[in-house]
Image (cartoon, rainbow, N blue to C red; front, top):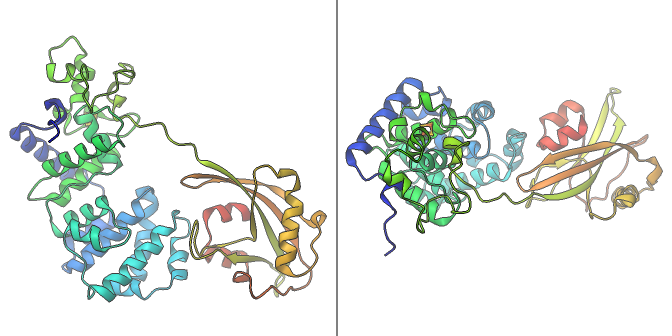
Length: 414
Ligand code: SF4
């Protein structure tokens, strides 16, 4: 069995754990943000619906700010108040409501999982973190822990980005916070710390602390309810000279949780020495030519042609202006290539010189730095599209914004 981590990296004193729980929960009761899914989880008598509401909120909150999510969450719950209602929705409806929230596969997977609960689990949400993770597609360890603790009162911890930051600071964990050794240690710590009588509140309190007080760049340590338990704060206040041997001695040897010897504590950073992350991979650069085909509609207002993307892959099933990914080394010929593509697709001649260059739009997807090279092409008459090509339709500007289109495409139209 691996050796237990050095004492300064975990909570070994039960009295300290009790005090930390009490301080954190008291602060949460005083200061927690009023969020719609919290209200529902606290008052809804139907356990299935509690689980569903927390699930929807947690999936929306992945990679997205709380302030953005609230409106989407409210509209979602109004449209599909139950798992059964969501299971009956079409992917098109889900994409329409999700439009603008990003990471579109989240909505699709949520709906697929709701269908599974209805068809294979008789409409009953699994009640433990283990079953939630095992049985629901798209539900990972964090989401399962959040649903089980908040909706069903299971005493199980959660580890998300906010919790990683808080725990790494509380216990001076400075090794790469995405390494398996650190992640395992943080899960063990979260499971050991979680309050047995109020697990959901405790987990939300820890995340809330990371989101509002123990923030990445300028944490508000003076207002922190757990500052007396924070090793990073002690390290910052007392420096090396004061006798805090359990903090100072660590790292001299091969401690797997300390900052690497090559990047030791930097006193100018204070508590933000923790956590440490491995260097981020650079996003992949991509260029895509896109053409806004425009015609006058029956009332004289402009209409635009949009086509649907394939049902799998990036932005699956969303609508976009006719687009063509470009090879990195062909910038000079892109207008000609786009014209050829449109010609094959529309079944009528399209001259490259007729394409008007409008500008470039950049958009960062999670792992792709995408540049759209935008052209426009006004059309006089109607056109007949090859029925074998992707589904397409003409939309007014208003219809465009109500369609399942990505934020990137809204930027293109703008
Ligand atoms: Fe974070 Fe500062 Fe609180 Fe420590 S004292 S947990 S660094 S806010």
